[in-house]
Amino acid sequence: MVRSLASAALLALVVACSLGNGGNSAQAPIQGEAHDPSEPAPPTAADARSLLDRRFAAQPACGAFFAMPWDVSTDGARDRRRATALVQAGLLRPAGESRLPGAGGGQAALRFVPTAAGAATFRAPAADEGGVPGLICYGKVEVTDASVTDADPMMGTGTIRYRYRLTDVPEWTRHPAVAAIWPWLPQQLAKEGEATERLALRDGGWQLESTPRPAAFDLRDLSR
View 1 (cartoon, rainbow, N blue to C red):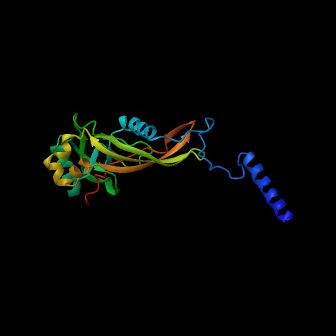
View 2 (cartoon, one colour):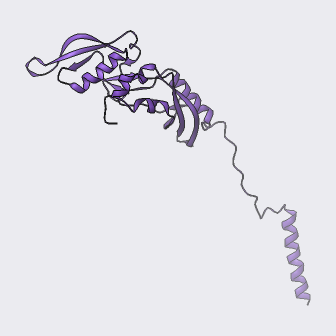
View 3 (tube, one colour):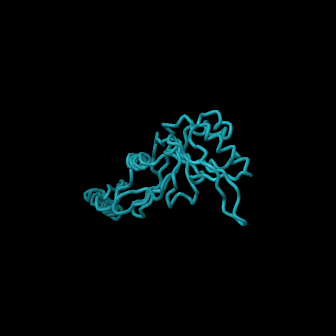
């Protein structure tokens, strides 16, 4: 009986010591740690939107096309139809005869050059624009929503997912002659699209890893 009482007293003493020590033997759940200001902050949706807005303010929406001046083979019925449609839409004008490079003095061609109205529509591609010979532009990209996923500040990477629409779409895209050649174009330019871009942490700030090119349709291709 005495031994049982002693054991009970010892157990009570152990419990009392545990309670007196603030119950540290049962640790509280670990809460999320606050951001360390010495480390790069993860990008926010506002950061992503700002990056895209700045880029698209200076960059029109363009698709692949032919270099200007455009020399069209006299035997190329398909290209002549395309050129004629753009002449009727007021973007190109005939500029006489030319020759395409080739054996035996090359091949006879008709030359087309941009009109004053079409000068801003055609432009030469930048070095990082996929090696296409030329570009044809048809509006501005407006971001309607943006979010950031899988951002890793320590690795300096992340992804922007965004929705966009085109604004300031020029009237020539709806010209009947153009619609007859590219019947899919007005619908594609009118609908909202989705795209993703990679982020990179450089020089202490978040930047787009490459140049975004949403709505970049290839108008050399008539197969759509």
